[in-house]
Length: 383
Image (cartoon, rainbow, N blue to C red; front, side):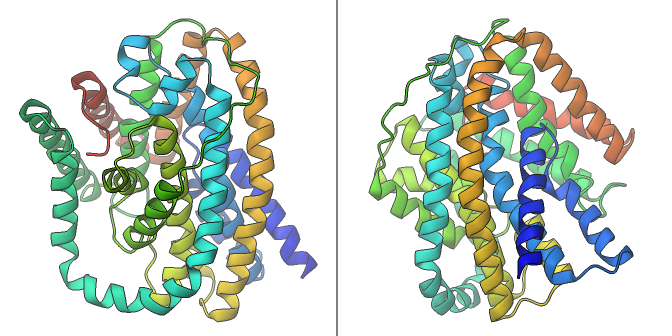
């Protein structure tokens, strides 16, 4: 049992490392871990615990770079991520505390809901699986309708179609094997495009307030968001942002704090319940779950160990997030921000070259152009 604990701690360390480096995702490290397990004849169960701990801890820590990097100027901030609006107000540390609370509460909510999910999840999937395409189309249509004006709806449809076409071309091309095509796609749509927006902002971030604001937990948002997130975890291609928008529609909540609380909760639940879905339906809905599926057969005892590893990783990652987030809120505003973002942009382009070669650059450039569209035309990035 002690060696399992050590593997969990190593996974937390790797998840923290990946979370702090922009463009480095556990999905990039997982093939290495799986390959080393086979090459060194390591125990697959211990390797699976490492992967689970890495995936859970990474969710927490990744909110540090996503909060402080790519913050645009005041004019554009209204149409981009709520976290960046709060950073512009000097409340970056508050964002870290909200997202940490959302992740931890999401983990606890997932644990409380686990018996019911184990009882009904498999049956719900059996009823749903014949209608997945129609459900996905309905969700996409709902996202478009949330724009509330014909002009914005038109732009939302354009972003949706362009993103879908790019994904179709990329995943049917030379990078179609494994996760290689996903690296330039996600890096461009959400990473490099955000960094380029930040280059248009000031040369320094505003000083971040050192005090501790009260975190207002909206139980309705937490409960509805968690329930929707658990259900949506069964569907491919539905992410935390879409689930959060639906939760906000259901609860009529419009505050940035509620959005951040809900999206971090749902983000954590998607990974946590992907392990449960391996047991219930034998399908992997995340890269972390796919790696676990390669390593071990998921039975009740394996699932119990994964739940335990998730709780351990979540508890330690919460402490690390608050500590590292406080340091980042003090350190990053002192840096020459544009130069810092330029260096990170070069870093993520270099990562794309490393993992995908030259063929990844056109995908990255196209994805970045599409990623710049929503904030420029004033629509949500969920499309």
